[in-house]
Image 1: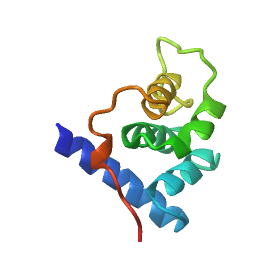
Image 2 (image 1 turned 135 degrees about the vertical axis):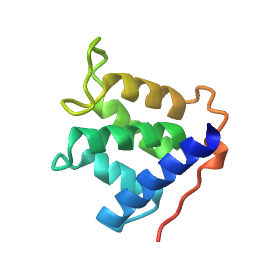
Image 3 (image 1 turned 45 degrees about the horizontal axis):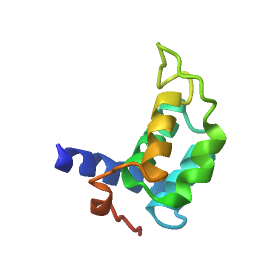
Image 4 (image 1 turned 60 degrees about the horizontal axis):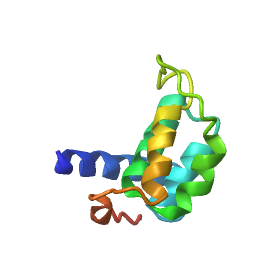
Length: 108
């Protein structure tokens, strides 16, 4: 399971970096999340990946997008997932994330 998560985090990082060609993985994912031209699905994947990475640099942008209202029927294609934002904020904000040390992707 950890290998699969790591692979998906790496793919999200690579995709974000190829799109923006700026900074490291975390910075590229933040650019992707903040760019409203991207689909909700892409932006939600960036939120998930940022939560997996657990880097404190993402905290401000995650908190900025968190409303606190989590709908029972959230669609990754129609809105920013408040559930994923909550989990990512908890992970970045110091909650236990035992795999955080595994993710350190730097591009190019």
